[in-house]
Image (cartoon, rainbow, N blue to C red; front, side, top):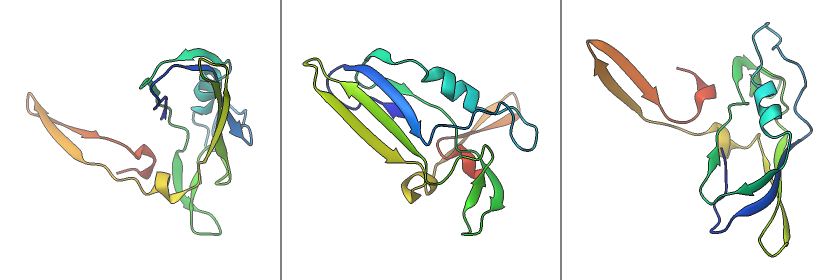
Length: 135
């Protein structure tokens, strides 16, 4: 999730990835890649990002297979060394740059709660967070 946690509008917001996201449109197993949507969403700078506005994207989808280090592999081939980068300005024209690693335990170790609803006898399970961990 990308959000403006500040109290003022972030200007000329640019969201990039280092290294850049892969450019394929399908995963190695032939499924549609979600990366094209992420690339399109952040292709242009955002003129004004309001405080508390959040943009959610799933781009770390794990396969269930482990790499040589015992870490789950990403279906789209995104390296654990990748980072999401933010460049933006405040109203006074001050420029800021932030960077967050995508391979840190802070992201992968997320847990969530399950709520169950009954709709006409059909049970619906809702999950919050960590969609890449699976059922």
